[in-house]
Image 1 (cartoon, rainbow, N blue to C red):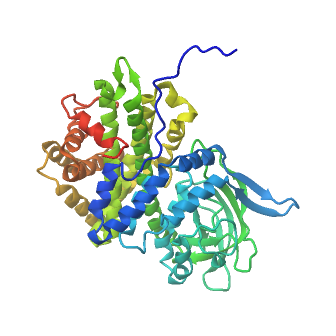
Image 2: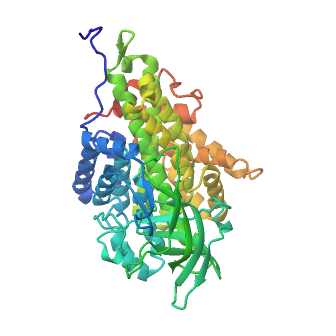
Image 3: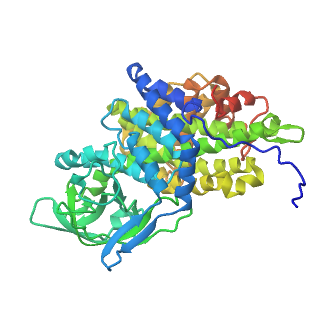
Length: 545
């Protein structure tokens, strides 16, 4: 006989069956702002379809399944032959196939390609972040390959193809291909110039055999990889295919898959090369310069990916507080909870607006916009990715104990949150790259100052922050030790200038008061109570407005 002790009530319905793109006002407004009028209908149509898929119960289930079933290394077949393959759950393939089909590896050859692709990446990452790694690298490899027109002609159509064809085979026989990357080694890590992998030239021009290892090889199931190795002329970039044109496997021994904190659905591997055939990309000795454009593009994806995690965390927190009652009313109406939600919403919108502004600069492609990117990308990557983890942790807390339980999905977001700060150069690397751009490329600083200067006079706190930043830039004493402080200040000033120009007054006012005017505590939920916090929260609600 079953005893009934109570009736379950006051439970929050799942946030599902919604359009992730259309209900994100900061993102949808940015797409409209940065897309030419003749493309508006097409772009909004494709992003709306992607947004509805990302918010569907089916795709959310795929994300949970891919995360709960990490990839498995199959080093040998049943007969003992070395195969070095990685087996993924079917949900991973469905997510990756949908991403490729939606054009998330194709930005360089389409009108408005970077804005529409960055927006799509931001939307689709909210379904599941791990499969975004091969999507990002495949997209980012294109500018590196373009240093060799012959290679670009063969590979670019495959990398930008809307067809996802799983399984290993000669790339030229496939309808679409994915590309991974292997730069870091055990002894050097980020210091790739310490790499010891050797590249021995063959008789045929541009062909080499590689011997060595990579400590982190991303997405080892890919069809090819951009890697760095020491050629006779110095550190050089190479394209290494997994399968050779005749169908034989290129020597590529996967020693193990990394057991990572988060990003569980994605494979990261340690690999060994032993007489592995590769084709040189660019000139000998200029490997870093060749591959740097790929690094820059993946850094922008780190910004967009962090913005996606923040947006999903804020959406879940606001959704929960909209339906959950406590102490005589729904949580969203409680002044202190509203302060917390508004503070997180500001951080999320600032990250989104900045990511989309960087994407628009890629689409523009002018000398001034490319100069702007050289300083804005590392500053944005430094700051936005750093803000992701504390924000997701705060959003989890809004759900209380339920947020700490796996079923809520919040622990997966929290485990994912630190990744983008580490991938493609951790905080110190980004801060030092900001200094490098300042010291070596005067056009970069001029372009940055012109950008933030477009908002001067609109808010006195922003004007004051710009003056303080200029003072900081003029003081070269101990500049390296102050690099993080400077990168943070530049990112905040840039975010403030963009919000003052484009966000609603209540959002810009709250951001400038708290982030630039100093009227805020050290944690979330410490905004001035006199601000219009209700409007900030309502703008960020994941429902149709």
